[in-house]
Length: 389
Image (cartoon, rainbow, N blue to C red; front, top):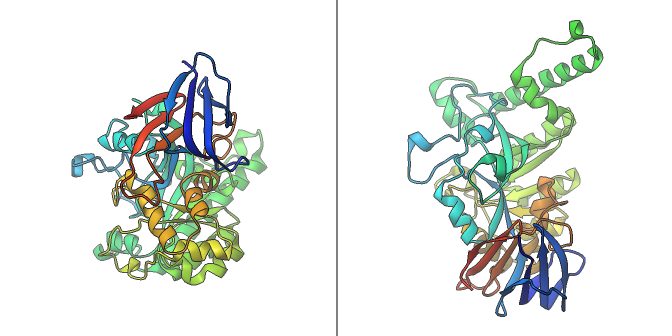
């Protein structure tokens, strides 16, 4: 693996070095070796950004890539296991098709990392994973599995199960199913702790409760699909009651209760912006939401929710939020360092700092302000995976 020196561009580090107007990034051995204005790199392969923008690889903090295969229909639809409303044991890792064409779209758009997992039909839907967007198998692409446990509130579980007379028919039942299952998981974990090394005292093995044990032990968060303000508050209430971590995904009406979310200390992953306009729950969607939440003190990331939008749409969505009042620097954070921190991957991703993964996206201009700009090169783990420079 050759050293790569990226030069002649505006480097948005998202780290302590801030923005370098004419900076350079040195990549070595799959990691970022140095960031500066005049780096010594004899023999390195040169990537000339030609006056463009040099960013950390973009991160989509919530999508379903690989589980809803492109233009396949039912045979490639593995997003929701609707045979049972409570399926925490379902692993996205087992259903993702890593050769789907959308991964190529992601790489060509500068998106190097995604959080992907089950859809939102089930009150408890299963395990999300974090993965890179280049590779052949999940073994080489996965960053963290499980990353989070998907739960869903609002109209989706009602529409999937309630219309057929199956539980949950109401929002009350959705909350009840999630709460009851989490209490069972806490009891299961407590029994295992009390049993210690004595197998005779351990509870009978339960795969569903095993899958929820990392949630109860606060090793992974709940990833909560919640659009409406009342569903957001229900999600927060359950998380507080069970003392578990949670992220608020979609959070469409979160701007209406920004002070409540800020007091909770939880983060919001907004989107899809411009997706699913037919959904009743997004009728109060506002491009001003990101700015309102930011000013209230909430950490915000932006998502595509693919298949709602292609992954290359990510910076365009951010640009709309910036146009509606979100500061530009915060806009860049929503798809880089903020997304990494919300996903718990900030030790490897989200900023151009020595020691982090050599994931870099180069754009011909400012990707959140210039609709005409293109991703001209994408480097992942120190290898050039897309290059039209």
